[in-house]
Length: 211
Image 1: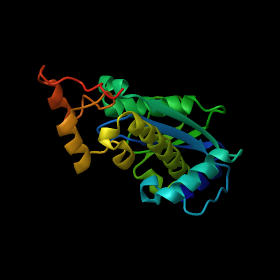
Image 2: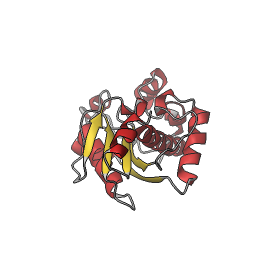
Image 3: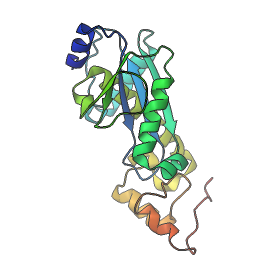
């Protein structure tokens, strides 16, 4: 998984950062982005696309990454209001830019998961399914995913009716059933279907009773 980093290192780049997000698809909660620079030659058993890694192993890898003094990383959390204002694509790119600019030491090359790149003045390339091909992107993916999962577990304490601890805001049958029963709460994305329909009628009010 280090083939991208290896070739970039051969070209003279040293601080090669992986950039990824978690939470583009859910109906509720923020999108979280992460930028991560691994020391050259870094190895960690089990690291992969965060969606492919067992939850317990993912948490172990996350703890290893954030506690390794040689691993540099930055996280950006983009809230629901910004997602609704910008749309999810632009909110994600904005979050990626924030994560990159939040790095203590500026990377000299960015490997970005997906097919679009944020507007930052650093050499970069988009890598489709990059979290399966680049160790740096996979590390960023795990950092972003574990950060967002923790945020949604905290939201479960505030909004227990929606079971955010189980589905993390994705549109599962249980989540959709809760929406029909209770309506949306303040962390639901108004610009997403089926949330939009709740705001087409003045009779349906935003449920803030659990705040």
